[in-house]
Amino acid sequence: MLIGDVARRSGVSARMLRHYESLGLVRPTGRTGAGYREYSSEDIRRVFHIEMLRSLGLSLREVGRALDDPGFTPSALVDDLVNRTRERIAAETELLTRLRRIDAVEPAGWEDVLQAVALLQALGSDRAGERQRAALSFVDEAPAPVDALVEAALSETDPNVAGAIRWALAQSGVGVPALLADGLASPVAEVRQRAVQCIAEIPDGAVPVLREALTNLDVVVRRSAALALGARGMADAIPVLMDMIVEGANDVDAADALCTLAGNPGLVDEIAIGLVDRLADGTTEPSARRRLTQALADVPGTRASRALTDLSQDDDRVVAQTATYILRLRAAR
Image 1: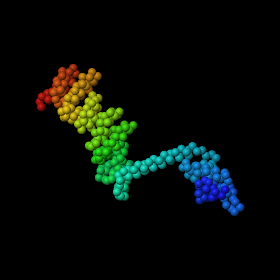
Image 2: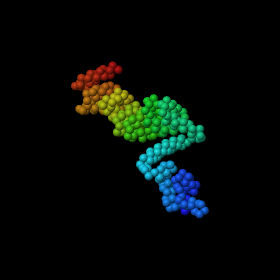
Image 3: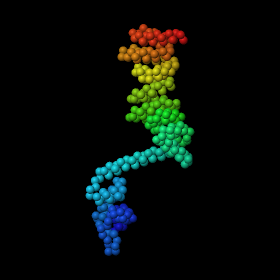
Image 4: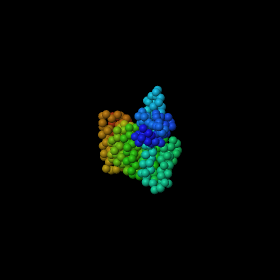
């Protein structure tokens, strides 16, 4: 079979077949009377073998080794191909993500594209100072790919850079909490905690996401959400805040948040009743009862005062003394 016939049958161009021959990969076994290359069925089979191995990503040199070296074992080469393919896919995926982010900001011209690329590169820098500068300049740069900033927020370990990124996210608009919400479902505890910390600092649009975070399986996420909601005057946070006081987890901050909530006349009795119920629970530890008594100090109203009067006669001397002291302060006001 002549080279043109082989090219038509195999789909490999005559020029490529000649290149294979120059590398010694294929050697036509015969010649016609006119001196043209003549390929045998075995030669054609070898051409197909070359194309099969090339389809796996082997170089022509590796193809030659695979076909001609009797001692060649494919396992090491296949493992290497697997690793190279993974690296290529990762690089292509990263490029696709970058292109999508640039497309999402709808650049008006190449200047916008270059600006977005510069921001993305700075956020991915190995130098903390460069990442911090990128975050601080983020809100002044338009267009800016906010989802890249969200990704950076969820992975940043440097506290100074993380603070700058949270600040930038807080300035970036009401859609940011929804982007951060995926981080609350991360299997990595640190990512969940970074996500809720970012959401807590966003002034607009964060409340629905924070309310959902109150039922998160991660106790740190629940507590952070409760503190943020309490500071916003949201009653949903009250049960978690009281649990924090009982457990001694950020109990001072939790008591401050309850104090803020108690400034709402409609919530005063609910807070007082909740604290009293936990004080009356026979399973509550003495140290927790003392913290709950202290929390009553910042709850106005007659219900809290009556509870403190009862506690001034409590069997726990520290609780009784604390309640008596608070009552004196109230009387002096």
